[in-house]
Length: 150
Image (cartoon, rainbow, N blue to C red):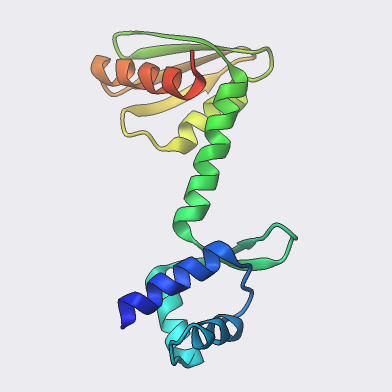
């Protein structure tokens, strides 16, 4: 019952903008789950739900996964917009970007949290990144090219 209820919660917050625990409890009760606000509160904690700004600006429940996907999509969009070319030598990666976009691209790469990447520094149109190994550098270049279509 608990798993089914929590699955329903995830479906509800994915399809509707739900602002409060009471509103979520009401939707669950209408869907055939007899719940109290305390039960909903426990489920929210267990599912690690967060509040994020909805389409109309109100704070609504969302799953952490949704936030992570949105963040990852934003970082990847920055890379696509900035990207000109990328290549590696040993564990060093050089990424050429559109003029003025290197800082944003470096920040996006750092924020993606790729385990192969130690860090980045940026100029105006060039990012220098350091990978943990030569294989890691090649993997990073492949991932960047996949994301950017380059």
